[in-house]
Length: 239
Ligand SMILES: Nc1ncnc2c1ncn2[C@@H]1O[C@H](COP(=O)(O)OP(=O)(O)OP(=O)(O)O)[C@@H](O)[C@H]1O
Ligand SMILES: [Mg+2]
Image 1: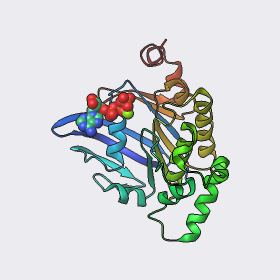
Image 2: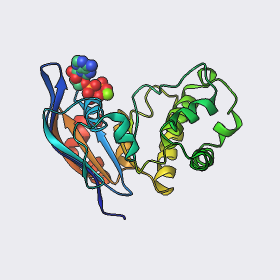
Image 3: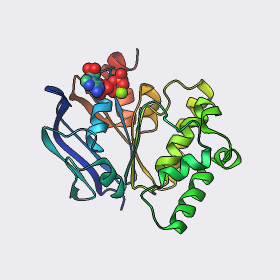
């Protein structure tokens, strides 16, 4: 269903303890899109993702996914509805093999045939994970570990995947590869929303983008249009 609104966050206010970090942010993701979120450090990008997937309870606003209200729903229940999350920092279980890491991603899935099918899809996207399936994840390179982390999120065959800084800390070769993989994932039918420091590349692959600043919406629009916007360039793209 291209064009149908898959995720809608409307006026979301959230934070930690008594402090609000997000002050009424709004965004949406259409089925089939790549949506990129950029903005300075501390803008609240990760906080927005944590709120959408249920790790933080918003103090105001609503979050709808697939036409249903998921505001304040527990993360595991959000995942069951088809919204997966790859946190910042490419977290893998280092002592477990690649295959065990991937299988952990399918912990909510009881149907073995569906797990096998999801695994095949992950291997199709990331052939190196099949080759290295018996290797301990902690001994993989940074870029490979990020593929494990993304692959794990794909194991529930989600309709929407939120990726927080997928290219952070990777060597230039792996940065390029991760961005190519994101496009491949879109072509394979996944819908993606990502947060990225690598703002120019994130906007270049995005159907639409948002700039957040100090917990508020600052700019939004088609990826290429934001990329070409003189003010966005000056403020967020380093020139
Ligand atoms: N667990 C926490 N407890 C208290 N404050 C937090 C917590 N996590 C983040 N913050 C604060 O919330 C603000 C926004 O942080 P957030 O991680 O959402 O920003 P970000 O846009 O993802 O930044 P970065 O680009 O550095 O990842 C920051 O001021 C941060 O210090
Ligand atoms: Mg962050």
